[in-house]
Image 1: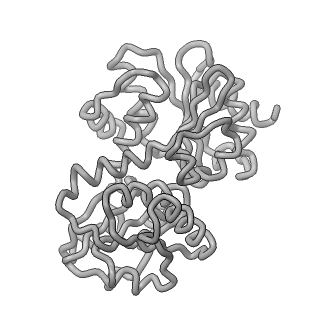
Image 2 (image 1 turned 90 degrees about the vertical axis):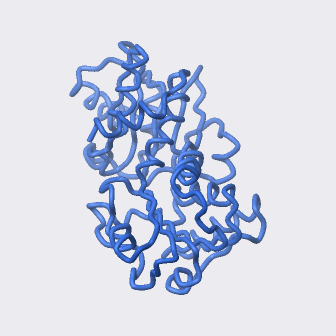
Image 3 (image 1 turned 30 degrees about the horizontal axis):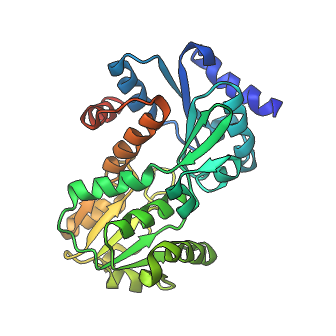
Length: 298
């Protein structure tokens, strides 16, 4: 534990932060240096007059293996953090360090927000509401008969739950890790019945779908490209990507060129941050202001 504490204290010292000086929160993940989340949170806190500091606990920068996610969470709680946002690749692994889970987080088996309060660590998932709200705002009228979901990790689980709540009739889960896809489909069937299945043939899943959602990291700068052959797309299909950096992934660029209706990840990123900020601070966040903060943090 001491080595992990030292890594976190080094991050705090870079910004001359002390846990007692303000509400201290952070983001845990890999390759997160370009995240706009700190800027969104800190600007909203300033607007509300709250002393608030948001730091990045980047496992790549700290040189830590994935197995240290539990000790990092415990150390952050001991150092006085109010909570942590959790991102790739830890949304499922982090559950083991929680004392309790919100009903939605328990249903999908993934968290993106951990709140520390009175010695208890509670796990939440604001990605679900974030994606659903983004879809409702930007994709009204989009057909939701059949949807192909690429990625069965923590983000995929949240989006799968959101899609089912949005009324998707049939969800096909696609993942190169077939057991992981099966595990997610089985978990979703516990809440939504046989409307969820796995798809062994990605090309067939795309051809049969009204809409396709990418929740894999393919499309980020670190993982360029598209998660499937975009030649399979037709203008009648809609395409969604939860990646927000770059704002338009290769998948969305090609889909838009074909004539598909597209949904970028920016809306989800903003909406999930609204809910996370409220969990950390206990104050109501202004969604419009948070959208401005997102742009200002670019």
